[in-house]
Image (cartoon, rainbow, N blue to C red):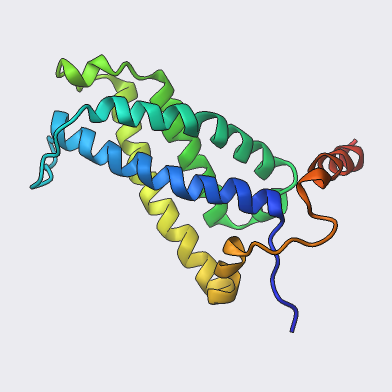
Length: 176
């Protein structure tokens, strides 16, 4: 039986996203609970400037999401045939894009009626649903063996970091 293998660049980008997205989501939940809370609050209200922490995560997430999106549209475009992958990527783009358009002082001053803020909240819910769907689809498609491929450290000889530029170059030449 052939063991599933995921390209190293995908594993690197996906792994970084898998760390940052939940952190951004959870910090956003705390920001929402501390400042807005119209639809419910956490029973525990952690102290600190969570808006700034959430914004700091966004500073790292923005360029990473851009790189991940470029990967998905080029080397990973075959994976976009799976609706769960495409939905997760679109939800991420909506969350990051709407977050970039927000003013962090809106929440501090109680301005919850901005369209972009509402869009960001919607994106926040979509990201949660899309990630659950994405994980479920992976488990249904390939089970634990496929899921484990994202955590493998082993690299194939033609899939080393020095090979990434050539992989992109071959794709671009094939596309033209």
